[in-house]
Length: 226
Image (tube, rainbow, N blue to C red; front, side, top):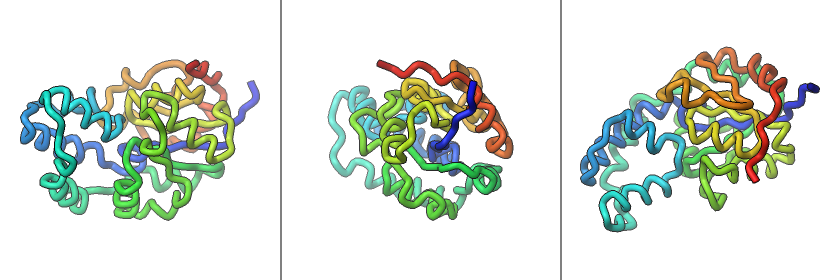
């Protein structure tokens, strides 16, 4: 097979910024305050990698009532205080980015506002400015392929020539549905077995990423979801 990778698409949370551990911890507190007791493991399984809109829909379904438009306001300081104190780049990612020579972009379930904050806080925003895409721009978030296909279109690269770097089950499923190869980062909260599948290389050390981009390129791209 001819090696063909022209674009590396990065998820943000848990791949570029080490935010998942912090965010899930605060999510548990917020959900409990709303009346839904969940463990961190349950939050990871149900929500990690999904969009804010999806999480809100599930909270409303569980509570049996709509949330007010400003429901997040009383809790935002909890996330900001924790991120300001603790947030850092994922270990090894800065070195990996320095050694990746092909085009890159970001495609995340997070909002643009959130990514400006987290990527800016960790010094990574300028590396991707102008090449950052959010689930808020498409009809369906992960695990649907819409966001990754949107990113590829905007970057003028065919899906089969893209490699996605993800740390969530829903993220790697979205990559496969888009007909893209995936690199599943298992150095975070997601169990390795949730990331394994066709067209996917699972790894746990970001320093290996530049080499693994070329390893993934030799895999057959998954069949895109009809």
